Length: 111
Image (cartoon, rainbow, N blue to C red):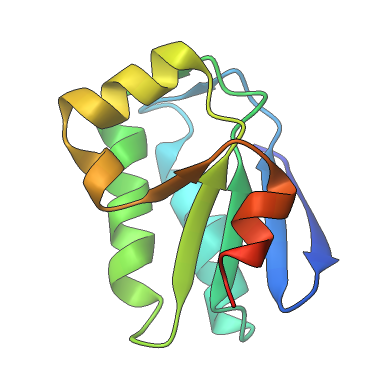
């Protein structure tokens, strides 16, 4: 699984380059995000614009990363497609993760 990353202010913007975050890629997705945290990144902005589907394995990976990011860390999401957003709402994880429309809004909310 490939992810791209870039710096935006104090945040690291991460874009998974996959259509599905499911059991096939969730472990690798989690591993790559955990490596970013281990490298000192504690403000992650996830661009889910390429993602059409996420299952419980993908959600579990995000929750695990959130638990490990530390008390000063933050995770924000943006560009979440309607189908993926509905999964977050159904599981009530939209109350756990801040979901923004744009990268700018997500990055600015880190302040």
